[in-house]
Image (cartoon, helix red, strand yellow):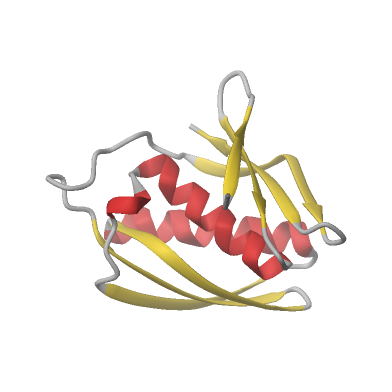
Length: 134
């Protein structure tokens, strides 16, 4: 399981797990897009790469997921596969996806922002917890 939904009253909170922190970040991005559309129906038609930095792991996760929201909001791209590499507080990501096709991608919900509220990162047993403002 890439991620699980956690109970929250008004917003969407997820916990993403993986064998490494990089895989957790990738699974958090998967969870983000799976809240927007059914990611299982997204095809790998386009490749998009970017780099982000932070001053700690929390800000790196925030900047990483916020970059995806910005990309989605400005290009209407949705992604289904993620290759993440983390070095310290710098991250390189290549993602594969496509533009939203209203005939194939049923809209689930709009994510307004990624928040620091209740964010947790566990490096020993790799997992990240993130709250999405809807």
